[in-house]
Image (cartoon, rainbow, N blue to C red; front, side, top):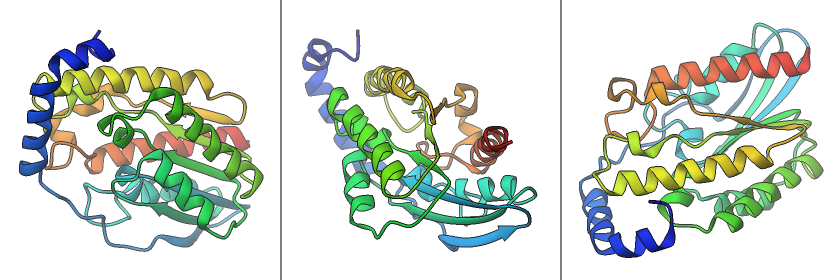
Length: 234
C-alpha cells in the first residue's frame, strides 16, 4: 500500500528528489485580495467563521468574492444576515491553525468551516496526531467560540493534482485518502465531514499552479456548503 511506511521508505530517495523538484518549479500564487470579514444579506443573523490553509484563504482566484468565503456568503446571504470572518493562511498545517486560533481573542460564531489536511500530508504528519489536532480545533471552536455546527472540508484526492509527478502524486494521494477516511469516521454529531468531489479535479477547473482550486471549484464548494448549512438550521 502506497501510504504505508515500508512503501514510502523504499521510494524515499525518488520521492525526496521529486518533492525538491516540485518546490523549485511550482508557481507560487498569492492569497486573493478582498476583505476577510464583513456583513451581508438579510434575515436572521448567522455568524460564520472560515479557518484553515490556502484553500480556505482562497489561493487560486484573484478576489475573495470568488473564493470559498465569498461563495459561501453569497449562498447564505439570501436567507440570513451573515456576519463572517476569515482566519486562514497559506502553508498552515492543522497544528499551526490550532495555535493561531488559540491565540486569538474568542468571538461568538454559530457555524464554522475548517479546511485543513493537505499540508499535513505533504509534511508527513502522523495520522493519529493530526486527528488529535483536528479534534482539538473542534473543541476549541465549540467551547471558546460558541460554534454550534462545524463543517470539515474533506481532503482532495491528491493523486489528481497536475503539479505532482508520479510516483509522488500516487503516494501523497494514497495518504490523503487515508487521512480523509479517518477524518470522516470521527466527524460525528454537530461536526460534519464534507467530502471533496473528485470529478472537480479536472485540470481545467483547477488554478494555473496545478495544485489549488480554480473559480468553478470554489463556486461549487460554496454552493454545496451553503445548502448544507441552510438544511442544518431549518
